[in-house]
Length: 360
Ligand code: T4K
Image 1 (cartoon, rainbow, N blue to C red):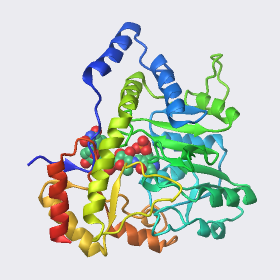
Image 2 (cartoon, rainbow, N blue to C red):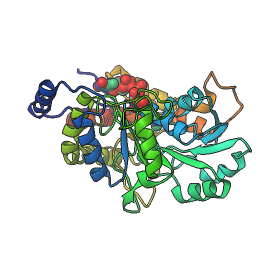
Image 3 (cartoon, helix red, strand yellow):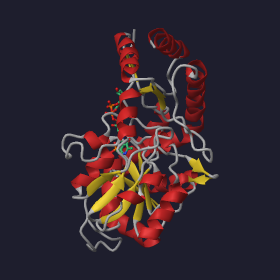
């Protein structure tokens, strides 16, 4: 029996990939804002329907750069239910995460809890569109405008998600994407900043490249967060496959949903949006049930992931119990992300469902 993981990165047609590699062999341009990175930025703007994109080496650096260019300081209100990078990037930049608990149905930050967390030190709100499910963007913007706070959306999972028929990435001051190999759309490692304000966009372009401007002068303190040309090739090839990728993911998603709907809970998807089928999280009745099913799957060489566990308010390197978020802690004990990727064979998916049904 072959191992089945939570995901298997999509690899494009080899010939297509090689044709781009041939171009690199001719020009020897491997990185530093090369033609393929520029081409991918342009294509992604069109595909996603956004004005400005800055490609980065990964999603974590995109977050850190967002904090820098917005001049954040002090405290940032965020969600404890996310991948560790959402919180660790704040701490890395000497910002203090202040957690507001999640809505146990949408799994996104509970916007009604944000205001009570605002102090004189708060500079921003950092919500996550968890598994691509749009947050309550209108309410969050209202709170931010009233209290003069910046909003950065960690949209690592929200590739091609629309909200009220427009890209979800248009909300907030900045949104970031992750193009890690495990993502719906990937560039091996990679990420992006989506910035509505043109001045900030220009600043981000300089900051990812040591602070250099187009005039080769150093305008400010920067870092190296550039995407390389080989990553851009992967992105250019995958972009052409997105329709096919989405179609097969939808099929897998629908089968799980049909088979499991009477025995597990699902994330409640924002009614103004559509799922992008990037993950298939299931919520069990209690942690014992989750553990039982997880163990049975592992015994059969099937490896779902506990996205997201632990709840970030319980991280050892934060002061324990200071930010007890009951909903997030409860959900993180009961949730499991099932394997979902285009190459998942129907017979394997049937086996996964059968094991869950037998062990629940
Ligand atoms: N914000 C949010 C909300 C995020 O979810 C993430 C990343 C970030 C920010 C930061 O973005 P990046 O800096 O990463 O761009 C994975 C990813 O490493 C991480 O990117 C992602 N979120 C997170 C949700 O998942 P792990 O620890 O689950 O990865 P790993 O290596 O265990 O991969 C899962 C499975 O995928 C493996 O069991 C096998 C398969 N796999 C993985 C890789 C890397 C492959 O078949 N091939 C591969 O190359 O974190």
